[in-house]
Length: 447
Image (cartoon, rainbow, N blue to C red; front, side, top):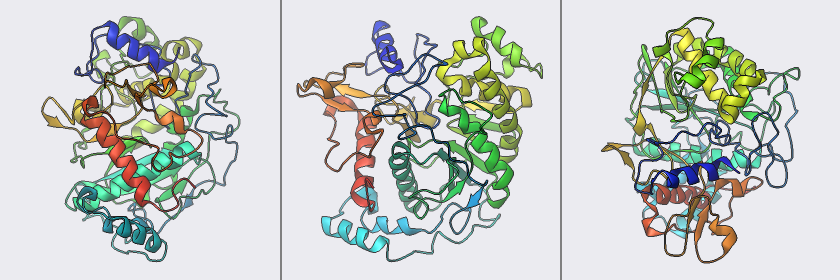
């Protein structure tokens, strides 16, 4: 049974309907949610048990046609500046999407696509200095070059640029994609990118692709971190969509993170495992229910956490007890344990992120949310009733279905995503609207 189905069944067995805040305040506790964490958006369609290999439709999930074994020569600088604006070509999309896309015509979109490759706007390509970067954070996105990663990364960066242009005084600073394939891909001119390697060949990831994430951050810190002017970082993922620019929530004393209900370091059944990896003997209260994303953190604190996180992720994956207990989210546990040991505190912010279909509104306890994480499948029958775990796309009975895993080996085609039912909620609607808008405006979609 997939973790998503398990999650859905548990929701309803505990009386949680769509109106509940299941994504934030689930009463039950699922501890083998192998495909929940989306550090590289690599959840399989059906996930093998922890320690086994995961397979998706038509090949390796997230890795296109199998594991990427290419190794590069290290880090390669791509783009004009590490303020995260690269060549600035996407500036042209905004001639067609001003005011959240209102008023955009087919002609203006067509003109946008034709001119985007012929011109370059220098507004965003000049490097930001330290003074202008005060009060801002730099977005770091980790990804590889598989189709699954490319289309999600394009949508994410498109939405980032759009909101940044609409909110010039926001805390948005630069943006960098950390491409851990070891070589260039087709998005080098579109998304500001640095290239790092996959894990060394002597470290077997055992099919657990998320293990590459902390190593990618370690390489970025070693080779590129001194080239950005911002003092703060937001660690993010390809299936994160900004719906509102977050303010600078982190400080030099405290990081900020989204709380995950299934990361419970102090729970007795897990604490005995945590203690074995707590070499620094950090106090129990120092351990937080967090993963590595989304996390807003000072660059100095990130440099403290990452080496320990990278080391622990590998050790815990190789440890049978830890791997069996934590499964697909063992890397998240490694981040939580590493942070506690190096003394980096995290404030928990429930409205940091929404997760449809369990989050329905665009706020949490009257606080506007900042990110949509579209990791779960969304299914509604022909009457608009939520059918968690039942794929309406396979029933062909007039229901509605959306799951990013359907587009593992290719991007969604134009016209393929239809509007959700009216009662599906604002979060799902916005997710589809953002993806569709990016598909309509970005050039060479699906290539």
